[in-house]
Length: 114
Picture 1 (cartoon, rainbow, N blue to C red):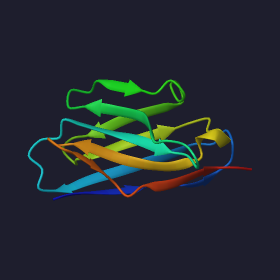
Picture 2: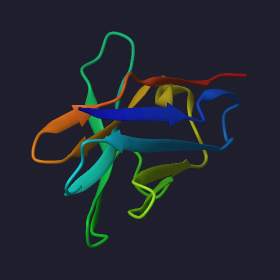
Picture 3: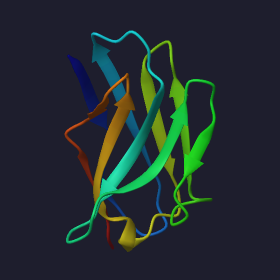
C-alpha cells in the first residue's frame, strides 16, 4: 500500500502564501507523477498542478502564475507553493501520486479569509 501525508494547510489572509507538502511512503516502485487537486465547498474536485518524474509541470489556469509545484524524488515528496491567495482558493487540497495506480491523500484544509 501507498500512504500519503499532507501538511502545511491552514488559515491565511487574502494575498498571503502557503506551502503545502506531501510525502509518500509504502510499497512504491516508481512514481510517474505527483500533484495536487482541490475541492471547494459545493464544487467538483479540480486539478491544481502536477509534476512528472522528469520535472514537466502542468498547472490549472485558475492558479497559473500564483502556484509553483516542485518535487524531491529522493524523498518521494511533492510541494505546492501558493502565493497571492484569494478567498476562492479556499478548499480541501489533496495530494496525489500515480505509481501505476492513482493514490490520493486524505486532504488538507486551506482557508483564505480576512
